[in-house]
Length: 520
Image (cartoon, rainbow, N blue to C red; front, side):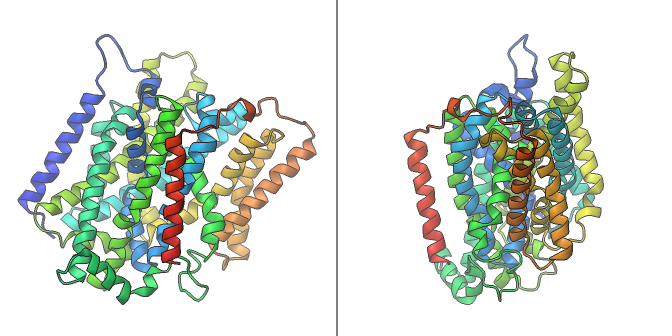
């Protein structure tokens, strides 16, 4: 497909504007040089609206837009459970996890693990997360983003990855988290407007010009099997989303790990002005998550009718973009790229934060603040280069990259959740027990995948979580050390939340009940 001159102009204006705004918000007062708090935590100054928007911008990327649309093309609306259950997970994180993290005044998740357990746990988990972020998350975003650009504009995938990486560095490398978070407001607005227009256009096409509402009615009538939220055992995709387990089983573990203990997500809340601002930001993000299936899943379902003969499911969203009118195509293209580069910037910033604060600073503790900031910038660059080099070998042959990401991370998330949850809420958990649970997660998951391959991976995640938790409890009790000297005293933590947070949380729960009741 050829991009028209007007589309190119719209996109170029977006690129220039974003880089300019990022430079403006990143400026420092005369005589002040960025320190680690400025660069990695935005000077602890983020307001709620920036936190909420940035949480979504970091989360919604190529793996979500392209990957979940692809899964919508194959599985249907059921894949939206990842979005809607995440909204409720965010409420739990804001209520019970965030107060503990902010009380400890941490930069990174590994730093919390050292404060709660010991240095071994911090180092092991820091290395683990660096590997996952570079070889799974960054590679997925780069590859799927470049695939979309290739489908829409015909640009070679390698050059597409280079452009995405260079663009994300151009607006984030100097300013750090503040540049990323503040410009994410623009990214999210663009993403929502572009995504809603694409959905509207697709539904209007299905209704032959009779409007999006009629198009949605026609879509549900023509493809009723695509609107089952809870899949039955005879569904060909039951193994991906195994029925009621989606609501009560392993998806909770996946979501708690992602939204509660994932550095490039939780880092925004650690940079808040106050805990109240962080919690308002989280509930704002929860409402945005409720909207996301309309933007990332519905187009994939619509593509079953509009483009029924696609070679790959992940081509569903890009194929719809080719049908957009001139000018608006450029806007939607900019929205897609906005989602991609904001996630890339978030991930590279978190990689640099973990490497600098958890590994490099431990080896060289007496360097200047500006030296650590420089190291962080270099690490961001190196991480992107590595991810570009390995993206095609790792992801080039997968039909549904989103499912690949979920299944791969599912090997490790049960142990991570055990490590953190027991660390926060059970004083007797020892460092050795927590470390064994984290490492045992991979072993248990591998054994299940070999000897019980037909077990749906979401169910496997739930079972492995129970095994990891049991292992940690047994080891802790066997060591007989009593309460850990660095255990969290929850009596000293303020878990109270504002009226706005409480009412908003009830609204999210009510919406979830309504959605699952209608499309059960």
